[in-house]
Image (cartoon, rainbow over all chains, first blue to last red):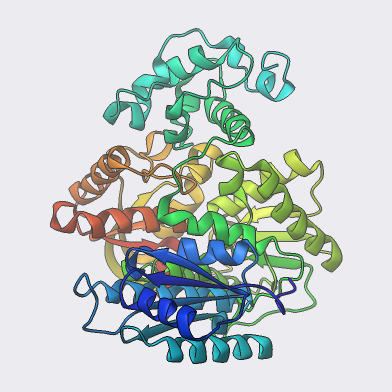
Length: 128
Length: 378
């Protein structure tokens, strides 16, 4: 599996997560290989969807959502943390490397930090 | 097309007398009137392929109860597999349980340049014989324990237990560092192409390493390697044996002694192992060889055992929950404190039922056979 130049899939929640992407798209550019998939809440993204992204050729998956305590739906960010941990374990067993999955929580509209995080993530994947 | 198909002919579906005995014993039909094996045969025989509107084909548990009862040994589960393969090939989407994670996982395991790191769980006290031409086929237990961690599933304990018992019996074995899923679930849900890829990858690995004998503890892997691989790939390189079949002769000859455990247990016959491959006695003999262990049978046992209520990670719903409730109630009615099963999937499905029904389902402890028997050695 050649993952060197593969796409990065970012599952992004419709709330604070998406506002970061929008801010980044307006003022700063993020790499073209970053593909954004908008979901209602990050808790919708279970291990099946994350693994599917890898099956379809993604080099890495980022889960981008609201900071703890700011989740639009209350405490639903707990689900995404659990799924993140489980899927990291599975990726580790598969030998793809748990590092290919990351979970990022950002405050509303912080495009600059999103760009920084995604670039850092891509650099990490290249090292795997 | 269907009537001339040799696979269909081999199921003896044309001998179906329309007597409905299969439907009477089918656990799914009991709770879901829409599901009717007799009518599925009627709807799908003598046509130009599968009736694609027939969604009920996805609810079959492949529990072999119908086959057990049928006087003409009409292989309905195999007929269902053929219908599913045809439907899947025509793009019909089934409802995957757990978000399709298990299906995707198997597809990922088919990757050519895959280098799994799947042996991290292996305890240091387990002795491996790296040069041995006998291997122990672990199955997907390392993955199950992660994916179903919230249900406190411990299928790896069963594998560890089986390995400890093999060590105690001085039977040498090696483990494969890059073993793939056996693929049985993909085959059962109609993804024959997906199955062929993982099966071929496993077969190539067996050939490369000169494997002569494969020991398994997962009944699904056992069935797949023993029956599906030779049938689908046209050849098998190694002898496939189930771990209890190796152990019980040693117990009877006095070459292996188990320890003591004070417990009252009952045994869940996995459909694939029991009705599928007729292994009813040796798991029971393993339990009875443990000193102090009181063994009781459930109301439905051996050839009549009730399925754990789910199969091949598709179409799990309210009907299947009712079957699981019934099975757990049968286990509790025996007065046993523990339900022992030799199938990791029985454990997963029944624990899933216990977890999702809160306090409405009996909370009987569910453990793997090998893990329990190995505990007596401590």
